Length: 633
Image (cartoon, rainbow, N blue to C red; front, side):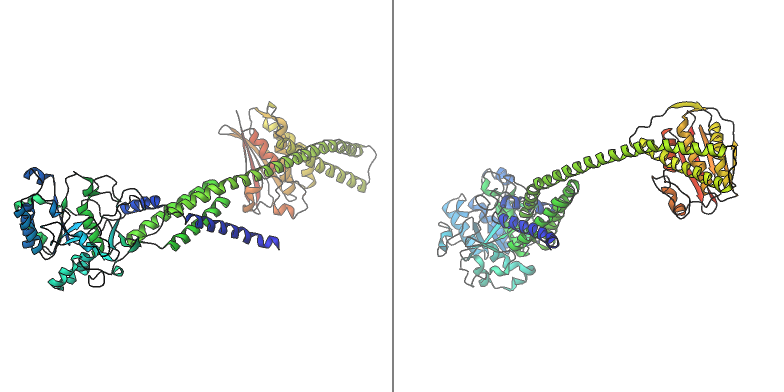
């Protein structure tokens, strides 16, 4: 019963560990890592396409150089008048009009012009507290110019803490900023143009978010609450997406202002005199990565198209982290190191690719930091445990291998000793049988048959013992070649003569067709054993009354000896195995032919020791031909 539940308990323990890692990691936000990977995803996803509702104007280097100064109050008045005459829908100035230089009369004229434009406002990087709406009021003579809240959230002391701007504020303590109020009018491709002028004045942001202002956080995607404020992530486009028009070109009338008709026009600075005019973005962390003007354009565009990235709930990130943690534990404990690294690396890559696709296609920001850290923690936590297990297994394998080696040595020594001890009595039996057969006293047929049986049995036993001795020498690598010059034909005739009695007992004719050959260097005893094994096998497996042909020739620098029989042949599926140790054909097992399965194995081994080759060609029912090739040098 314990064994039955053991696998389930193992999986349960792994799942509990993964859950514990997930719970611990959930206590840490890892905002810097998460935001860094988010920035990377933003950079690799296709940028959003602008709706065409926004135009930007900047006081740039050309303006400062041409005027020899910052634009004055009179300059601003002229530009605002031209934009108003061009039919601009909304004009937003990120430059505080009270900071412009000019006489009192010029300032009052600028204030009068600004107030007369229906949807003109000055955006301030400030948020008033509830009940302090007048905190945004500009000083005299601009006190009646509409001023709206347009804060620039920067991750300085919160979230990633890397001074990058990724968010925009939609409302604070229930009071909306300019972004949702302006964007609401341009949703669905300016279908809200039917709103009356009076209603348009209500969208300047002076009224509270009690329903009169028209702001509702549920109207916008991805809004989240943070410290009594409604915020959303900006769907950034790369810097330069909103090509800015020079303030000077508007002032001098060198550009067609009809392009500003029915557009949101944002006016700001791009002269790199202060870092307050710029922000760092997911695309770049340079101190002048993007102007405040283009940030405002990106923020409004995000709300107009309602494409703010939406963060996945914490429970989804926890589930994903738990699954990846469990998978990592299984991989570390079961896969090989190389396979495990490949699997975990592929998991990291695939999950990051999925996170890119979800951000691009669905606008969802799924967490990456927690799953990635979970992989590293699980990997480095279990690797030592895995090493301990592997070391213990290696030690066990070493001990088993040591024991098996000792057993193998004992077996080899025993077989060698027994084989040597058996050869002496076998030789005596053979000698006594030869003496009896050669005795002058005639034997009865029964006695003669008994002596013949005794002789055959002793020969078979001697062959088996010799094979075991040769195998022991092979396995102990004790075989050394004793090379001598010898004519292969002489060996063939010698072996054929030795086996003549066995062939005659089956009425088999052993024919030889031997070409004249030069002597070659060989281990005579080993090659003699090879030829004896092949010719003896041919005699054993050939039917009575058949013939065996042994040929020799010199071909391509090799002495080639072939032994062809007329036996039953070897099945095709067995041909790759017949030279294996102790292998016997199915036909041999089903017959009365005795054998150990070592003859062909030894023949192949001895020939290869001479850098030669042995092969077989057989057709079922028609016989087999074994070929031995020995190099002449």
